[in-house]
Image (cartoon, rainbow, N blue to C red; front, side, top):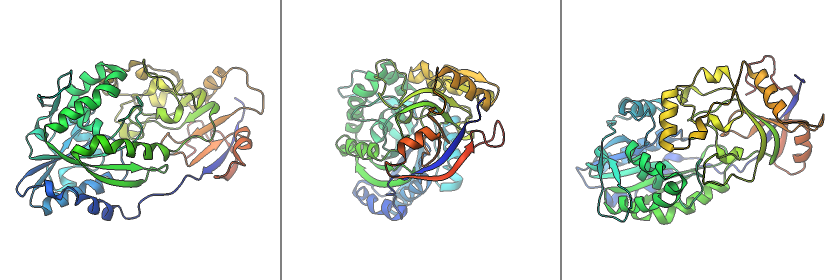
Length: 413
């Protein structure tokens, strides 16, 4: 292997995070105050994503409900995640610190659903039974560009109301229609769910390029469909990105469910691999290597098929049951296909580099990142630095780092 030296740089994205999250949440919650009746049981719907300040937000919402003489409890709203089992979904929440011990309120997890009728949806509509039997539901979720499709509504309160609260049964129905189900059927089903009157409202969170909370907004349920597209565009404009669009090889230290819904964010790497959804025009990356799987993924390696080469270290951590349940439910099977498996990091790099074809010596455009969520500090080859050094917002931290530092399996971050 050629001894590639990379340069560690910092990308300066706009730092527009909220300093006092607690105060912002409390201020927004008053919009929901008239909708909470004394003595009522309020379900707080929480998903499986790793969202910054999620536990803090949940605590504030729970306290707000209590202060209004009502009784909050948590329901997992995560479709088929957690192996499509009640215990698995509780375990996912507990992994984020969301439990009865930490919050002082019950976590009631079940895969049982009830059907919601009386609307225009061409498919059956379902909702978590415990949430449906409550006196009101408050959704708590992040709004961001989705990893599977691009439409008016992507990740956020609308999708959580449909697929999250609908459990595996609703998730399977929607995903059976592929991109059409997610982009066209999703808002139709959401209208029927909202019309049922069980959802009070939601707390929408938007994060910036540093994975920090930059916006908190309480939304009344009947305003979900109008308000969420505005928040989605704000989220899109504040996403991090790779410094150039034409890349020979991207080396990713880790992937995982706590990083992206599909382990590796397609919005960052420019690969979607879903029939019916056009592939992004940029970035254009010849080869992608992934070295490891996060512990917080609990073996769920959905999205592994977006890469070209992985390591045995990563492969040995895959829980195929968890990965396949999530993948089969989504119906996007390409994303779970196993790439070439290399013995170690160095071999993985060599295989991927060879697949790039002929590259002029000294012109190789290589980037190494921790994961697709953290792109502030990254490593780039000298040809990339030559391209970006004058565009602004780029700071050189350390020059001439060996690609694999002091060993074949040593993280650069």
